[in-house]
Structure formats: structure tokens, C-alpha cells
Length: 86
Image (tube, rainbow, N blue to C red):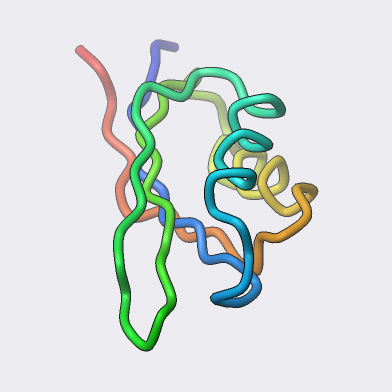
């Protein structure tokens, strides 16, 4: 089917979450990550933005969100964009 590029916004549970440790946990548990950066949101809270490549399977978005929901320190995961690679 091909591959897709997924851009995700990961929201930590609180401003007290160690973002460096959270990024390390994410890299250890999720494959296909191409880029990861911290983006300030406001009021001391920051999000982690992730660009990753994955297979274009049915339900891929749900599978990705499920992977991140199992990592401690993550409140929610939002898929900001999903684009097919040509």
C-alpha cells in the first residue's frame, strides 16, 4: 500500500513531566520516528511534536495513538496530519 508521514502532537500529563525522559521513552518504544521536538504551548506546558513514517494500513492512526497511550507521562496524542509518501 505504501507509507505515510504522520505528524503528531503529544501532550504530557502535566508541566512537571520530564520531557527529556519522555522523549527517550517514546524513542525506545516507538519505531519509525524521523524527528522530535518540544513546542511550548503556554502556562509552562509544552508539547512534543513528532514526525514519523509508518505503513499505510487501515486503522494506522488508531494503532499509532494506541502505541503512545501506553507510555507513562502522556495525557493525549493528536494526529495533526497524515500524508502519503509518493
